[in-house]
Length: 366
Image 1 (cartoon, one colour):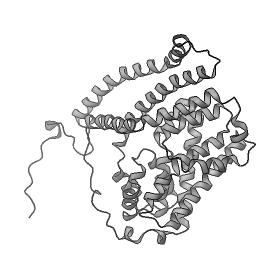
Image 2 (tube, rainbow, N blue to C red):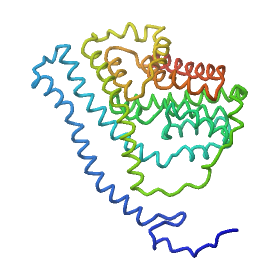
Image 3 (cartoon, rainbow, N blue to C red):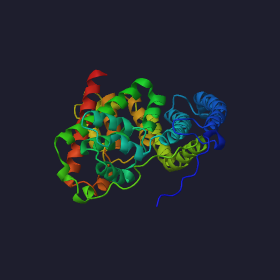
Image 4 (cartoon, rainbow, N blue to C red):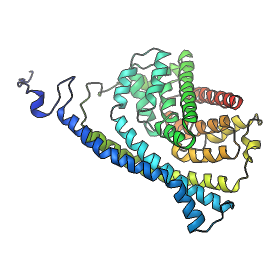
């Protein structure tokens, strides 16, 4: 029997917005957080801009290291890059934590359900950037997508784009290399995701998915989404900082330490022979080396920066970074639960082919 409905109160009485309206309480909450956030952002920017002179003062004046010495250059690099990357990471992860409260996996699944190839591949790749994803969530996301009617190729475009073109990588690249390199990485990463999903979709390889996946019900979670207050969104950003930064900071410092060693002790242009444009084998070698090196963007980008400073070609470095982030062996092991080995091989092969094309293309252009 249907429960008796109670008369609805006016939305302004409780501070809860009616559908299509903005809650006054939410508006006030947003204003309060903006008032607190603007001076905090100004303080962050002030600290960010004094990092380089502070690192030079500590390394060369306080510690007494010579600016031209290898140890001095390495120490100054670490003292500058470590707080710089961690500050960028804190800001980005907090912002992305708030952004992800708008782009839940359930919402992404609903948007992509029933989408055809081509347009669906592009949309999936674009949605992969802000949607929460890690290797451990590959299986439930894959199952949820395909059982909701998302085509296999579109699903794989999402799985390629989400770890490869993630927001942490883009902002760190922007902070360390500028907008051109960040835009190049985003464009090529999305292109690879669209290409891989489109090719696999056209090959009609649904038979290479484990049979039990299609027998699984899409389950609940396809209904309406509750409205989230700004206090909860800010809490989500803070929780993301605790979870992500708390987990990756040792890898960030390790990557910066490796980069500092390269910066201080590897002679200028020494990498031109091994990873330069003239070495035709550099791009495939970078991909082969990168696949077993399971890391995240925050840990690998400082190494990429140091390699480029020492003469490594942009295309080779991009191929190396994409292979490390987008083609990890742990992800292949996890995906084996839902994909047969032949489909995993095709998936890795098509993505690797796209990465190789990007590497050679940018080595020819730049």
